[in-house]
Image (cartoon, rainbow, N blue to C red; front, top):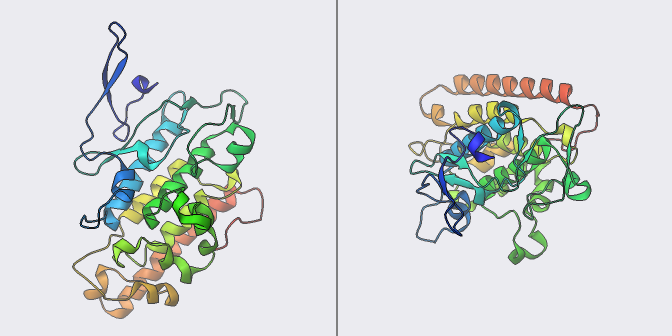
Length: 298
């Protein structure tokens, strides 16, 4: 399947070996390995991925998924989206890899692909796990788990955490309360993230993880949202301008403009951005949701 797909956010297959009893596929070299290793296998003396890099990786991964869902002909359902399958080149440019479980999307009047349940614990969409009905929205749920890993630095499933071993179950109650958002953020970031962008990233993550598949955004919407969020970068040149935890509680915004713009200008810009974001997502949710019931109220 991979030989039919070409995108800058998909790993490139260079060739293969089929001599004697040798059956090998040859892929481009990804110098920095997997996203999983950079999130979960970091020694105490290593620098963790910073916020800006995490958002760049999220955006690039979403672009790869958007290509599979909406641009590839026929469409492809990845079915195994997880941090170990997101590989990074020397510039942390992400590429999706390992399409061994991928399926071509439904054809004709079919809305799903019926298949044996496969995947990795912690990433599998609930409706797919219980019915075997695979859709593009199953991938969106898995992407939401990856986003949550990028935010929290936690594994999707971790036996060592006891009652908190399921990342989504641990995080879900905090989606509902804005004051809890800073508790979700990887402590290794030491508060170095844009307070104005965090609620938006968490809202997007919560939407991807909704129980009802039709209430999840599509890959194209996710790309558009993450391109916007990637532009709201944390600037290490402006430290402790506003405490991010206090900012979550007050609803005020903190970013690099705080140091150079008058207070009123910062507030007006924050309000304008919030209105634009809220109106865009409100319209999309109204058009996508056939049920008035919301899975998460943020």
